[in-house]
Image 1 (cartoon, rainbow, N blue to C red):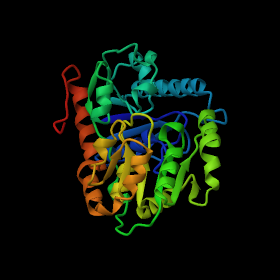
Image 2 (image 1 turned 120 degrees about the vertical axis):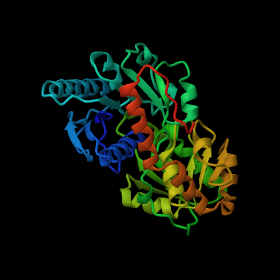
Image 3 (image 1 turned 90 degrees about the horizontal axis):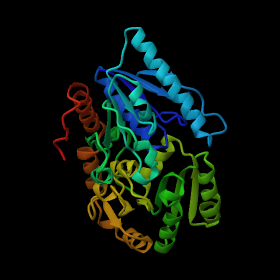
Length: 356
C-alpha cells in the first residue's frame, strides 16, 4: 500500500513528541513502513519519520492562530496529493491523525480514514456536518467508540500501542510518584499534586506547557504556585531519555484527568517499565489499567491518595505483561493493516476487529 499520514499542523512528529496523536503517528508509520508499505507523512518541519516527510510549513510564533496555519497545512497537502496523482504515484489511503484534515475528504477520490483521538466534547459539532462516502472513522477504545455511537462510518476500534522495547523494565522503584504529560487543565496536574500531598509523598511533575494561551494561563494560575513546595519537583520538557528515567523509577504514575480519556499512552509506558498507575475513572482509563493488578482506578483525590498507600501489592511483572500482550506497537499495526485493507477493498461493508 501507499499511505499518506496527515499530522497535526502545529507540532512536529518525533519519538519524543509530547502529544498522544503525534506519538501514535510516529509509532504506527514506523511499523507500517517496516512492513514494506510506502509511507509519507505530511507534517511541520522538525518531524522525523521512517518514510518520506512532506513539510507543510512552520507553526511560527503565533500558534494561537490555528485557523490560518491549518488552512496552509491542508492546502499544501491537497496540492501534494494532486501532484502525486498527476505523476502516476497516487495514494491508496490517507490516514488523518491531525483531527481536522478529514473535512477535505469530499475533495478527494480516495479513502480517508480519520482516527478520533480526542474526547467527543473537544470536537465542535460543525466538524461532523458532512460525511462523504470516502470518509471513515475509527476510535481508540471501547468507551471512546460509545461516545460516537451516533456517528456514521465508524469502522471500529484500534487500541493504541507503544514500542515496548523502548521502555526498559525496572523492578526497583523510588519513593516518589510521577505526573507526566501535557500540562493543561483537563489532565489535572494540580490534582496530582494535591493527591501526593494527602498521601505525604514526594511528586515529580514532568511535562510541557504547550504554547497556547489557555494552557499557559492554567499553568500560571494552578500549577506554578505549587512548585515552591519542597515535596514537588518540576521537570520542564523532559527529553525522551529523562522521561524513561522518571517512568522507570517512580513509585507510581498518577492520572487525575478531569475529562473522559480516549486512551492513555503514559499509562501504557509506565506499565511497560513495571510502574503501577493510579488513575481517575474517566473514559478508557479502566480499559488500560487493570484495577488491583496493574494499579488502581479511583474516583477522586482522596481515593487516589489512599491508593498510593497500597502500591506495594502491585506486581511490576504484571504491569509489563499487560502491555506486552495488549498494548504493543506490533498489535496496533496488525489491526491498522487489516483496517486499511478493508477500507480500500470493501468500504461499504461493516468492519469490527475480532478482538472486540
